Length: 540
Length: 67
Ligand SMILES: Cc1cc2nc3c(=O)[nH]c(=O)nc-3n(C[C@H](O)[C@H](O)[C@H](O)COP(=O)(O)OP(=O)(O)OC[C@H]3O[C@@H](n4cnc5c(N)ncnc54)[C@H](O)[C@@H]3O)c2cc1C
Image (cartoon, rainbow over all chains, first blue to last red; front, top):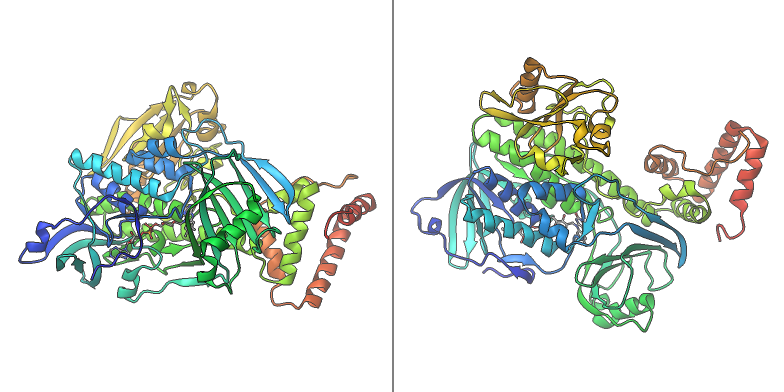
């Protein structure tokens, strides 16, 4: 009845009978999350930390085997840090800066990403997805101990939903048979294949790429540099591209692009995977295959992420090609965006239409990700003769001329999007203020004294004052903003001033709970701040 | 302007690249070759400076590039 679709790396939420299964009438919960992948569990953590009761239903009992995502960007770590689980990720993850690009086995060039100084977190880390997920679940367990109202229910498969005006009814299958639940809000985090989309008859439009990838995680104890190597048209194997990337535990990800018309069964045989690997690593290098898989991909999204009381996040809402590592990273930004909004709506201090801004902002984010990953895909797998000619011309020129190197696109690193001109934005009234912290942008981190700015901002609305006055707290009918006062002098490196003042002498920023800039001024003005706070909560 | 600029010089180069490839969409190989020829001539005229153009021709024809 409940067959596992994949094997588990970590069995973290074994099935346990819930009292809800014995209730005479379906029990109503404020929030039910369908799907316990990274996005579903992070959603639960966000809401639980706000004190909002949330139940996660997953059809398995833990985290799936196989690493899938490996590249987690700075923004994801910053979000995880807000949830209190970034430290173990950072401790376990591998940091890399050096990359090499090859074309037909010739090294075309190498690059050093030279990370900008003055950030708590690196530009990205490599970490197997199961670890990433496990650290989030570990954090859920820790906050449950402290009373956070989060429940993870394993082997609870959602089989049907009925959407009402102000709630949703769920039919759930368990090893003990079916039961029903009601939810004021249902969050669909059930992955790219989203059964929930199907149940609601909602579409998932976009582009299918006629290509498949053979990925293998291999363990090698031999010395191998911590670099990202990307081959275009390598002579080894038959692929159109190959990527080699380091992960923790002496494990490397090898990604062979093997074309569309392949015999999956044949390709997945260990001897055939080894044949490719040997051709590429050289015959003398011993390795162990930890995991392998073949995947194809799409770039597509739902037309709307919010459908009344049902809200989609993560892969269920949008799917991108893996180039640029935007899947899990963008899903985390969904959570970051949705969590505080849903929290305010459930607590009754913001109107329901605040949730429409989740649609507006995250669809903008999804489109940006789809555009970027589509372009990378088109560069890696040119779709026409002329496109192929141009691509190879870029690679030829890149060997000798610096101008062609930025044109080489083997995936643009995931960076968070800026919500320019969106409806929650307030005034941008800081003459001389830097563009990177303009209204709508995610706050860049900066050193402050012994620590870092983002940690200081906390998890609610913040009034960040830099060498400016403001009251310690503003309460606008239940929406609270707390002052975080810093001085440009607190950062002798000058990064804080460069990122937040520009040529201004002082600044007051209103910062949302997801650490995006809601408004900014050169000085405190109570009327303006209250208006911006209302606007950021869709009260006006 | 006398030296060919080979440093990166195009803002949002991904967007430019997509527009360039997009201009060829739906064209046959022969049509694409003609489009490219026209494009080179238009850009060459815009540059105008013979010394720069000669350096550009030499750079494009550099041995080793484009097998
Ligand atoms: C090869 C590969 C490489 C990738 N690399 C990267 C990378 O480097 N960086 C990056 O950011 N992203 C990467 N991604 C994408 C990343 O893996 C996904 O974006 C991420 O897993 C999405 O998380 P999710 O929680 O939305 O969905 P999922 O992880 O798919 O989780 C969905 C969950 O819902 C459960 N579920 C499904 N149906 C039901 C049901 N009926 N009832 C209850 N539960 C249900 C599933 O069992 C599962 O646990 C990669 C993906 C692939 C395939």
